[in-house]
Image 1 (spheres, rainbow, N blue to C red):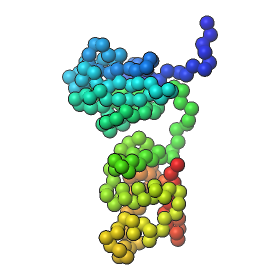
Image 2 (image 1 turned 180 degrees about the vertical axis):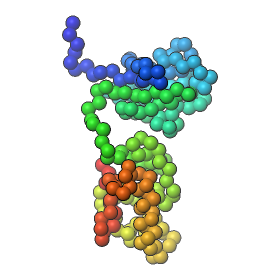
Image 3 (image 1 turned 180 degrees about the horizontal axis):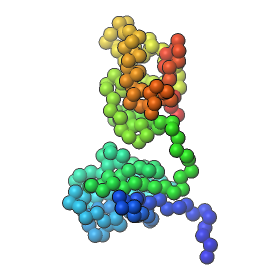
Image 4 (image 1 turned 45 degrees about the horizontal axis):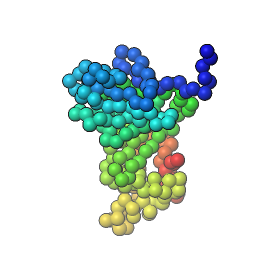
Amino acid sequence: MTSDPTEKPIPYLEDPTGREHLLTGESVTIGRAAGNDIVITSKRVSREHARIRRDGWRRILEDLNSTNGTFLNNERIVTGRELRDRDRIKIGDVMFTFHDPDITYSDSVFPNLEIDTSAGVVRVNRQIVELSPKEFILLAYLRERANEVCSKDEIAQTVWPEYESDVYDYQIENLVRRLRAKIEAEPSDPQLLLTMRGLGYKLVHG
């Protein structure tokens, strides 16, 4: 019997021992109770702790109201989150790594920037980044005008409305430098927040 060439390889979780847990079926449950698909015998793990459900070709991680929470890339999840290759899932004291063997893209050094303005959350390469209020205001403004050049005057009016016209170039430059240190892989060679000499700054964002 030949295999169906249209079938996609099955994603799996790798536990700390290197064992692979295939994510077959519509959902895979993780918890302390013996009835789970993946059993973790730890008091820090709830009886029914989390599950990974299938949504088309995607896999969605959900917490099942566990006591100690489910963490994706060191961030406690509240709602279902789509998994991506090499994501890290922490349940109790156990860290799993998600693998998608059908992944078609190659790893890129270009940072993956996510900005949730309603929640005030910023992630770079799936890792949450802590920003100061002014840093967040600047980033949110640049994101709103993604791929457009924003002048220093426009940035000053947006970030420091309380100062009116008393904002100096060095204040803007220092704020940009601090923001780059948090969102760029190489702040000295930025790929996201670019300086447009004589014009201002531009956020490169898809």
